[in-house]
Image (tube, rainbow, N blue to C red; front, side, top):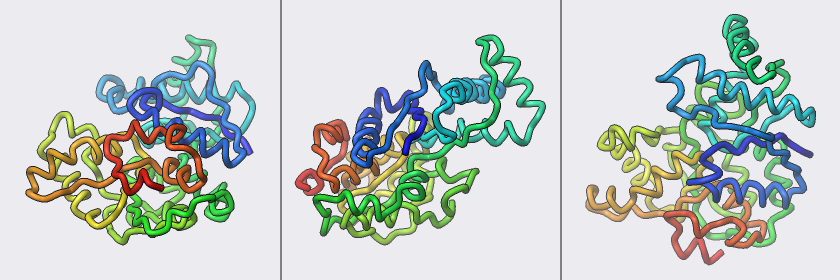
Length: 286
């Protein structure tokens, strides 16, 4: 099994542990990842306020480069923001001839053309539906028995394209957590927004959202995420939000492939757990 791989900017910098653990887990599962040669930024959240067309052309360029690889019809994307941007191009290519023509006109400057042959897939979608909990369980060498894990999906991997899970009541992470031998912590905040980049521009409003999520996770051993922005918000502001709440809201926050890798016996160093901002000793002891 193989996939074309788009890591995106965050996974080469602030979320390098997400990239490392994704690659390590896929290697352990005998899955080949072919990184897009010459990929560039997808535009993140910054491109659209500057130019709607630019916000389509940037991700479209990466898909056009992926099409030239002629290896697989699925592009695997771990970052939820990158996934959303690439996915909207896939959908717009099919539904909006005018936008499709504008994209191709821009891509022609680099002698590229987007045929629309590729399917954009989130890492979670592939783990849940192509690989599945049974295959994960077969690779487990160290059961994470006793750990209570909170599955946190965030917004962008499920909205506005609910292609692999229910955006209101997502459940795709739960069988994967249980396959590791851990317990799914009961809560109802899995699809709630963390405030995203508003943590920089409207910190008070975003902080209340993160605080609510952290309060709902009290009693759990770790929150598991699939989005670099969610990860940063949930782990980077725990001390400040604990002071404001007048209670300890600290909890380990790790990426899903880090959790799977722990259960598979992959070393802490390879999973880059030392890069996470919030990992308690209980989690590190596994």
